[in-house]
Length: 593
Image (cartoon, rainbow, N blue to C red; front, side, top):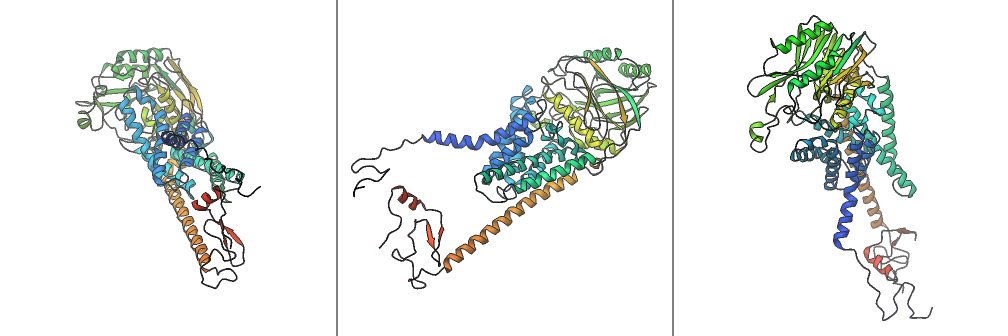
């Protein structure tokens, strides 16, 4: 190469290098926004696909893994946004049933509930300790969402999507909350494990990356073994022939659109076609809708005759007035003699469906013509002793709340009943999620469970959560089965949610302790390396304490990418922007004498 000739990659003298085209700023910003927003949003959508009716349960932990990946190494504001997007994806689909009733209410519901996941993501560390901490905070967020406000809104929860997977049996250890927490932990562990594998393939990252994920999966495996071996409802005390009667009818209509007499007539026809032999007959929720008290009414005499004619215990859903602007939603139980044994009033009515919270305030902003009356809050355990056995009753929406099943079994219930009415929902989303909730109840309490709906899903479920019988939607049917009465006690029935809440809080705290400990170790190493550099003597021939110069052997100018140690060895340093510019123009990075 002749002197003065241009180097390879260098423009010839007198010729300007053509300028590179830069992408428009808006396109760059949009790309960055999409690369940040898509993973958590897709994670929420994946979790939603794990919920019934799709029920692709492995996608639940996969969705959580995408959230964990989105939070890794991000500042708290980014984690907050990632959690919000994740919750919007999950609940935007999981609570899509609300769109049928009100668009504004649907948006408010999704935004409010997504905020729980946003706060959980923001409260978790972004580096070390993220696996247990994020799982713990998400578990606490799920518990809060199921409890507040207005008693909680558990539809769309992650546990409902795990009823067909291996985590279901954990419900007898810690109820649905342990199932949810385990799914969250599986997701964060999966992300950590995949990050470790990717780091090894790139030959980068810490050597122990992925170890926390392996430990978490080991804990989940041990929990699975414990769940399979944990006490359930025990052996059958006796067998009971039961029948769940479904009258059928149109779906997607409110109670104001369907005459009460037509609902009762459909139930009577289905009961008339029912064969003999059942010692317990279960009718759905509010099939007997009254504008007067049940006591002394013609409908009461009708129910008495049905029970005595069949020589069976009859459980029928009844609504009756309870004062101005109020009504009572209850299950009335009649014995084989035709006598009314007792009633159970629904303790957990549906907010904005069976009553309007803060009606006096919100009524000035929104019309609640579709909910003209407010349900009275009932009291009691839900257990009623009958000739058929000690029955634990959970009316419809109550099956989503594990505390209601636990209250009944603690009071001595040997069999769980769920009279329900989901006819107002046009799709199968709510009926399918309700069936999943009943499966969780059966496992958590170790009881057989009979669910009777006006037009689906009616079902008979075993104590392992297996669906033994199930009806279709919209058509009349009767399910007959032989169920067991049991009196065993599961660990969840004894201890409730507190052990899981303590574990979740401990995981959240331990994650932060690990993160803070790792930060202190980094700071100590940085301080030690800085001190070592300051105490390093100059190169041979340079007086001690004299500043290094460009002509000193073994020294490099800033930007050279190396520093000389006392032994003459070079330790790589991160190149500065200046050195990168110099190298890019093929100029020497070190000045020689």
